[in-house]
Image (cartoon, rainbow, N blue to C red; front, side, top):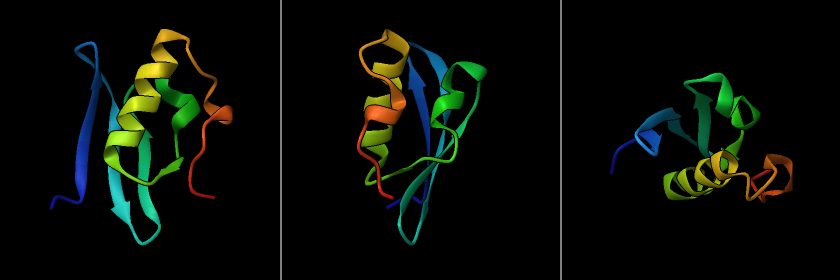
Length: 68
């Protein structure tokens, strides 16, 4: 299992997530995904889902559940 994943949304680089002891930390690749910068997620797939929702306007990043 990898410790780092690249997240793309609609062929646009959103960022990377890096596994740490508490989960997966998001690092934005463009300003459009800055609201997710530093957020901790349970999985890389959850980070990808939230990035996709952010880009589509379906959710506000602070409303999403992440690991505190």
